[in-house]
Amino acid sequence: MVEVFVHEVGRAASTGGENMVTTTGISVPTIPGPDSNTTQPSLTVPKGACDCHAHIFGPQIRYPYHRMNSKDLISVEPMLQELPVDVVIDHMGQVPVEPGLGGRAFRTILRLVKSGKCWVKLSAPMRMSNKEKMMPVILRIAKCAVVALLLQSGLAAAQSYPSGPLRMIVPFPPGGGTDTLARIIAQKLNEAWGQPVVVDNRGGANGTIGAALAARADPDGHTMLIAVSGFAANPSIYKNLPFDSIRDLAPVTQFASNPSVLAIHPSLPVRTVKELIAFVKARPNEVDYASSGNGSPPHLNAEMFKLMTATRMTHVPYKGGGPATVAVVAGEVPVYFMAPPQAAPFLKSGRLRALAVTSEKRDPGFPDLPTVAEAGVPGFAMTNWYGLFVPAGTPDAALRKLHAEMVRIVNLPDVKARLARVGNTVVGSTPEEFAAFLKAEIARIARVVKAAGITASN
Image 1 (tube, rainbow, N blue to C red):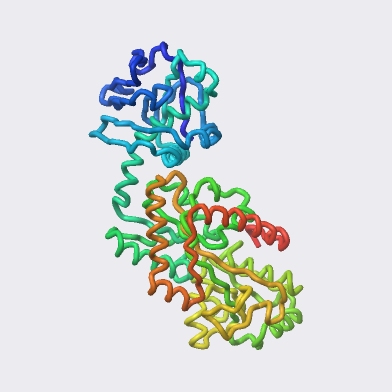
Image 2 (cartoon, rainbow, N blue to C red):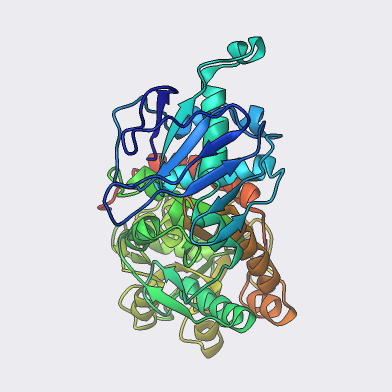
């Protein structure tokens, strides 16, 4: 958390001991830093651009002044939308900042605040007009923070993004549907931006290991996370997650959605959903079903199926869709609600048999398959989704550029056709739309988890 420190004008600044007050404008001279080898940046702000003096210090320095956190800044966001910004900083070269950034500037500030990039010391003016006296102190402080924090190198870095190799974390082992999608996207992103894109598989704990790694990464846009529907279940299942699903990861876009395919090993003597229900009811807890982890889409689909059919099957979780698919194809576990990309080649070869899809309507990729609802479980409907996240605090300019490129990629004719062949419908939502969807999805899945009694161990 960034802390904003305030002291009255007229009191000596602790690093330089000098008075930073001017009468014709706002000027903060270069002064010695915390050690003899560093100096603080020189800052000139035109008169009227800010109500306070500001100075930026390194993140390792703390001062015993009043503290203000990001919640304070958020509380005054509506009042800052039209804030004029026209600042030039002479630090590592001249860096002009576009005037009139308004709300975009403020969003940049919030991301810097949340990422802990810098600390700010502010000097509030002692003499104020009547109008200023009526203005809440917090507004004057926040307006100054906008000007000061905007000078950070994060904005300049965002303008040149990407500046190096990119990492796409897939929180499941290779071979699953998420991994397949990631490699399609990574190839196209490499072609478009000319930067290496490494697919980093970090499986385990229903994707929480990979998600935690992404949440801790530098918020510069060079680390991404591809998550699936199970991401929305994790807050309900894992009570001590090492990250906050909403606060620590910023949504970029929902790539696509698809149904699951209810697939079985051919050794199971059933050919329809009704036959499966009868077979399982006659053998309670004797039939196993696979999943890619506790709280994963296959797990949630199967538990919903059990609830709605009053059947009992035994859950066998694996560390990802790849290992689960291998187990089902080998006949180790006979039932699996699997992603279309995983199912397609094995259905075609006859090594697995499909009974239905989990969507409300028949899927164009599998037109001959009935829905689970059609096949004997009225009202059953669950779909999976794939989405992209970056660490919270990623500069807005980088996030928007990444979003635009990802939406372009999933709408490329060859990519769209390839996704459609395995049951995916392209979505390409905005960050705001995806954030709203995620919030609603977390609440919906929480109800399923509670009804089924799903925990991290079952």
